[in-house]
Length: 257
Image 1 (cartoon, rainbow, N blue to C red):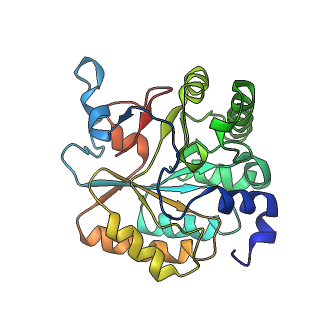
Image 2: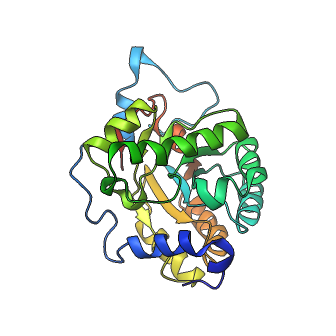
């Protein structure tokens, strides 16, 4: 476990490390119908088109960087990197010990043009909870983020990627689409930044959604190399909503490349 675990809170880091299996991206998930970014673009209503000057991911080689479980003391460095490289990202934030502890970072994430999203309050596996507990996990984080930024998220990522009909129903009620991923470095299992970089680059593909965590020691140092190489390969970095545009992430639906 990373040396900064105590600083981040034993409960959160322990939960994150314990619930994720090294072998699978979405291990143990309940069955669901996933929509791809291309599906979302194809579902755009009334012949909607991408706004003038915006990235058109039907034409460009797009990829989305996403970061889970922050913000943390590593997030300022990450935001500096993203600002320098002019790369937008999507941040799935944890409420307890993160959003409430770092409101200034939440404001900065939003102010610098990144997408602010919901990763639950305390990282409980939602499929193990009753509907009211699921609602509390999501709504508490919605409220905390809205209080800080003035806007409630429209995207969520269920811990460990686990969802089912009840989670979908509550997500729909709260106006949240469910966002999965296509590439992960398993950065909870290593502090080797070069290995994190290699794992992501090996899995990167068009319309991909990259999952990283800005709470672990090895992750943020890997980001400049990931960005540099993917730019060389011709990728354009976008937020998740930009990846789906002119379509929109519909509440309750699951999106996965």
